[in-house]
Image (cartoon, rainbow, N blue to C red; front, side, top):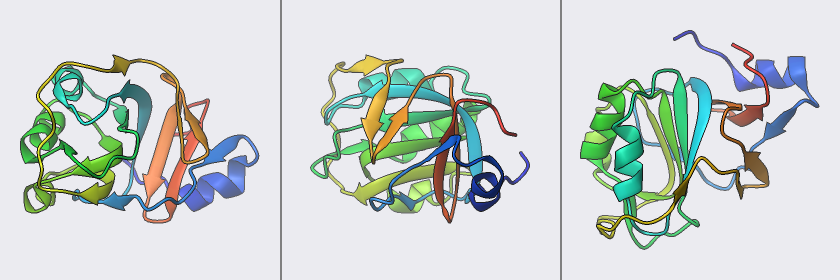
Length: 161
């Protein structure tokens, strides 16, 4: 995967991009720059639907998870991050928490989240997938494209890679 810098995208394509509001996302994974087509899921403190999606082929995709910004339970841990990497996902962006920080640091992909919390998620199937999400002053629409690096995160309707 080539490196695409968000600053360069902003210079070339504004105002046709959404710049994700910097609300505190931290990259816990090895990859510091990533991009892909958006897939979405909305859950609250439960991760079975996240696991089911990441079991699918994720080649060229980034899963955007709206966990309502909850810091009470981790939605992704080391096992799920390793599963995502094995299935080709470019990255996971979580509006919520992760756990197993040391394990995720060894996963060769990007895992962005707002917090870490050792408390595991509820083990129940709940939530919705493939819907437009809105957080951080941004619309995350399935099929659109997302680009992220250490400068920030941008979203485009079109593939700019």
